[in-house]
Image 1 (spheres, helix red, strand yellow):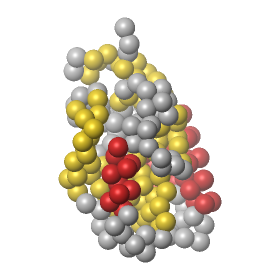
Image 2 (cartoon, helix red, strand yellow):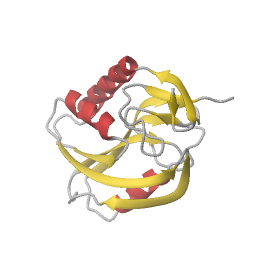
Image 3 (cartoon, one colour):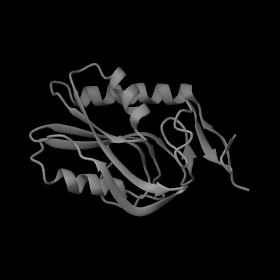
Image 4 (tube, helix red, strand yellow):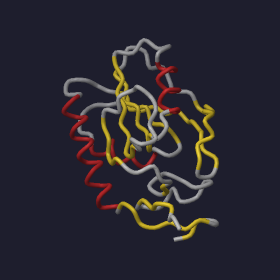
Length: 175
């Protein structure tokens, strides 16, 4: 498959994603039994994952959004830009919902932002995690897939704004 000038190949199917998201929701539901967590969804990339995760979550919950940007093309710029701030989060159990954790710069930015709030607790759920790229000390509590440090697109993740609508995950082809 080609997006703009790059070639991608199928990496993770929609069926595999759906199964794993359901498993993550059950795990979160077990851990948050008797609580009403707030899912803090990091836009734009996590919208599909968050939607499916919350559909499978059977307990009471709230949702709110934060929009960040750190990528240009296939690389992280290392700089985080906030376009939409999270709502009032005081005295809540927060589950940060990320599409992908690679360097950890976004996670660190979010956690530093949350430290200014009076939270009960926070945890991190990410559909994709690149352990070879991760450089931060924060624990990723719920991981869908550990993947190599290669660029992926689909299921909410994009390349220059394109490919978010793909139901499967595609990995950049290497020559």
